Image (cartoon, helix red, strand yellow):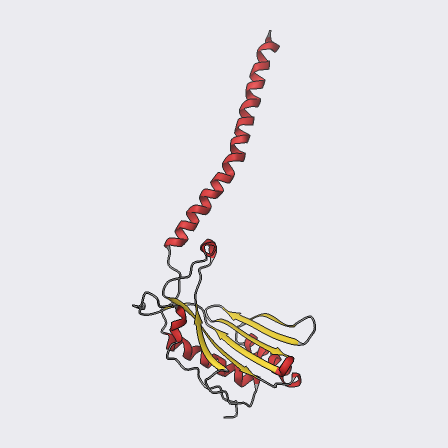
Length: 217
């Protein structure tokens, strides 16, 4: 009699724990989805923490950084503003979960200063890049990479520093082309554009890239 009464109770307990286990298995993914949705909503509602900086100010900073690196590289060519020494700007995109939406941040821009030299021999380019790598490292820049392509024909130096963006320098064996680029972090325009069709590309309109001069000048 006692054994007969215990059997249903055992079956009931097993069913209860099975139900709890199933509820847990089903509930955890649902909870995770809710957490992701809430986090995404909070990030979408929070503006990006970019400073407000005028494009001219950003261009001056990028130009000064380019000149400093140009001094260290030791090239003797004078590079005036033009096709091989120019400013550009582009869109800014948020990080985190917001990035999945692939939507740019309104009234924000990312400015770059780029320059190019031709006919730079390997015997000059590689020692110059090593000097620059050591200099930037001493100045607190993180060396993301400094390496060549599998063929060994091209070299690239990539660096970054918190709050200052990135610097990228590349040398190509074909034509001895040496390129440099200072890519600033994103910033908001101090005054939002009134033109509804304005884009971040317009941030450098009317701006002139600084002339890069040899260190001896």
